[in-house]
Amino acid sequence: MEKKPESKESNSRFAPFPQSEPLPPQAAPGADGEDALGVLVVEDNSDIREMVTLLVSSMGYHTYSAATGKEALEQLRLYTPDIVLLDLMMPEMDGFEFCRAVQADPALTTPHIIITSAKDALEDKVKGLELGAADYLTKPFDFTELKARIRAGERIVRYQKMLKEQQVLLEQLAREDKLTGLCNRRHFEERAHEECLRAQRYERPLSLLLGDLDDFKQVNDRYGHACGDMVLRQVGQTLLLHCRSSDLVARYGGEEFAVLLFETEAEHAQKVAERLCAAIRTLSFSHPSGPFHITISFGVASLLLQRKQDLTTLLEEADKALYAAKHKGRNRVERGLDEPSPETTPAVPAEKT
Image (cartoon, rainbow, N blue to C red):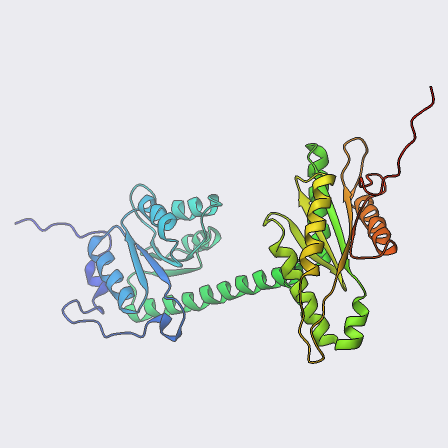
């Protein structure tokens, strides 16, 4: 009987893996509270693919397998595995083409790729690394070495995830006011500047509220700064509660707050500010010396289509209106001088005929 030709990856090369004996149990990577990583085994030889998948699974990883590069791309899109054990020589799409496809698709998260190949040429190793692979393991390989490479890959993947989480946290801290949890002045002005340009370009209404707690210094002097901080936190959360989720609410500085109202004209913006005034007025704060209340004053400014305004102009108009509200007795709302509210507009005598 004629002997069948061996596959391109002879199973004899994997003799260190005893198929007749069960693999010893391994501690799962996520046993310390971390989630187990996912490993995709890409290998067109079914026997090798099954053995390597079993080995990786016994190490505690979530395992996926693919017989071709195209199938591996689909698995990558579906499951986003963290590590890919990639055979280099495959039909339809080889390992190099797979790496190129991953790099070319911005929707794909680049995994930690370990190329496994019988090709030991230096140019192949360099080419694989240049195309995005992180490691290159020459066949035949020892399973002990393969496990070590996977563990090393896991450490790199977890470190990269930690760096991303820290970057997200730093970005959040850069946008957020630590005391109130609202966005801070810097982030507010960045967003407000963009929204002013967008509203003017598409001729959409946009309004700005500047609010300042009345006589807040007396709260700090009488009840202490810890109590003052509690007041600022509760006021900030009250503003969030009574604004739309699409509105941008910020602690603008000290006891001053800012609210950017999208798709909101001056008249409606004044009503929103009056509602916020009433909500703050009803708050009751506890203290050993007895409960107390606080009020807020607002200045309102809105974009006008008939004249060009930028964020600086809008802030100046809202600030002037806020100053007017303070001057007229506090605990009230005033609109910008170019858009006076009906209550503050003096009567204009009719022209004589």
